[in-house]
Image 1 (cartoon, rainbow, N blue to C red):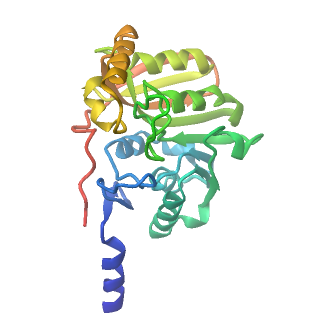
Image 2 (tube, rainbow, N blue to C red):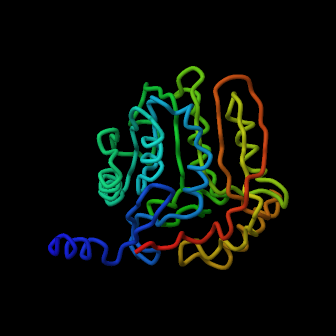
Length: 282
């Protein structure tokens, strides 16, 4: 037992252990400096799990786009999914997700495939799923700027990755298939209008947006942007956002069902400080 305690102490050194409902998740610390960071848990993960409708995921074949720590896939398996196929580009995240799946007793149901940054759907071309889940990168990322694996490629609104998912969602869902996505999304001072516009353009079925009532000024996200961006670029980005009517950022869960087209919104209970990581349980 002493040797096991020593081993665990070494394992947890400079890492973070979080409890998300009944799931224990090992990640990097928030100040981990390298591009392959396995991002800590934030309120968006319990928000997603709160919104998971267990009867709908029973015995489902699930696809997760962007595995990260594995918490969403683990949650789906614990809720009764038959199997989860997960796509991930970060080798370090695959290691952590596999460990977390073993730690939570669901490793037999998880299949991890290499992701593809050029075409996120390429690794599962021609396949369809009962349920598709994701917590995609959503940080605003100006063109030609480097970022972490888990947060790059979002474009100036942080929605480029979400749009890639929306654009082929129907093609990869079974008839009456479902999707659930948790993300932060920009809009005006009332609703995540930019996300709603993407749903209107790309989604042909029933879309329900569950919105946290606590919003943040879009300007506060500037401290998350990559270093080295010039003042001129930042001013240009600010002007573009103003022209698009973007002023606020919202935390949202998207529920989608193939079928008759509709878009509805409702507000959830608030998740205070949803831009801050969950408490380290070490």
